[in-house]
Length: 297
Image (cartoon, rainbow, N blue to C red):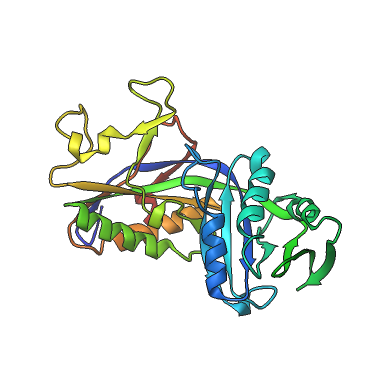
């Protein structure tokens, strides 16, 4: 299979089921929304080493939010039993501290609830109050810049983590250009995030280690161009000098599939892209297998 002359390998992305919270942060201006969103999703690239995977799904205008102010939809992915702690930390330290902010639940469909807002009220030291905003019960916490509002409960849903594809280019310049085009095509799609810097992962990993038992993930040497002549079974094709991975988390498998499809199509428009593949680990990571060829069926 080819798109614009780029070979799409008959490979599958090995993804897995995970838990996420999806919420909206609003503020008095787009600038303060971005400040809060950037801080709240920091150090959230991969659960391999971070306590959560986190990212901005999309930005909303004032006409799309309950309080008629600009906002950003954020996703935080971690183990269900750790979610409350993770949200209290990220919202309490990074959004409560940002001027003029408010937080609304943005989970849809069937989901559980965690009482983030109720627990955060203790920060008000007895001065908390409650009020309705757009039909939502909000906790109001007095702060020096006015008040911080947060919905009493935030939802926790089940989705798919680790949908991915590999952009294989002639060299670093072409590969990075194509990868950014892919990331830009995915940015703003409903229900998905790409948690790595700029939406691009340069250090694709494999499960476990060939040499070190204490490592739960290590470099994926089969896809390292610099090791092509040293590694038996290297999967780096001739003429490929750089590879980048785009990793997608989404509220459903369909959402992840759509993001992968749009990302691949965007990457294939850049000259110098040789192939598109996907990372899998023989079923040792997850049970959600997304065939690249199936994205267009």
